[in-house]
Amino acid sequence: MSKPIKRKNLFVDPKVQSALAIRLAVHWFLFAGITAVISVTLRWFSDPFQPLSNVFTAFINEQWPVLFTMALLLPMFIYDSLKLSNRFAGPITRFRRHIREIADGGELQHLQFRKGDFWHELAGDFNRMLARFRTEEDSATAPSDNSVTEHEVAPNR
Image 1 (cartoon, rainbow, N blue to C red):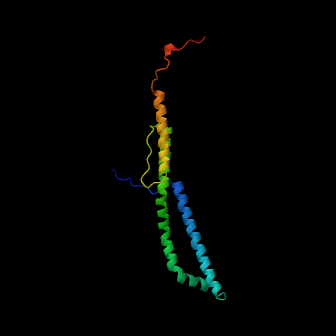
Image 2: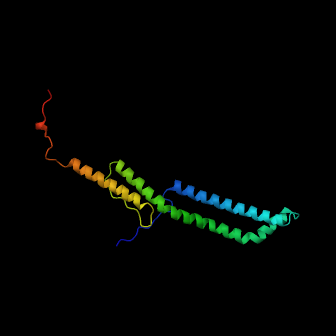
Image 3: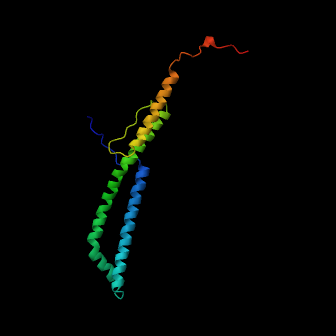
C-alpha cells in the first residue's frame, strides 16, 4: 500500500485562500470589537455616573486575559482554516491543471485526489468523461469493415 502524499504548500490557490484568511480575520476583529463595546457599555450602564476612562480601565484590567487569549488564537484559526481550505482548493487546482494539460494536447490521464480531499465525486465524473472520450477516440481510429477506400469512391457526375 502506498504512502499518502503529504501536502508541501499551505497556499495552493493564493487568491481563494487569501480571501478566506482575510474574511476570517475581519470576522474575528468584528467579533472582538463588538464584544468589547457590549462589555464596556454594560459596565457603564451599571454605573452611568462614573467617568468613561474608569470604565475602559476596568474593562482592560478585567478582560486582558481574554483579549490576550483571543489574540493568540487568531493565527491558529487562520492556519487551521488554510489547512482545511487545502482540502478543496488543492483538488480544484489539480483539476484545472489537468484540464489545461488536455487542452494543450496532453494525454488523457486519470484524475485522482488525495485521501481526505473534498470533491472526489468531481474526479469520478471527470474520469467517466475521459473514459467516454477514450472509447469514442478508439472507435474513431479503429478501421471498420464497411469503410470506403479511396478506390471505391464513386466519381462525381
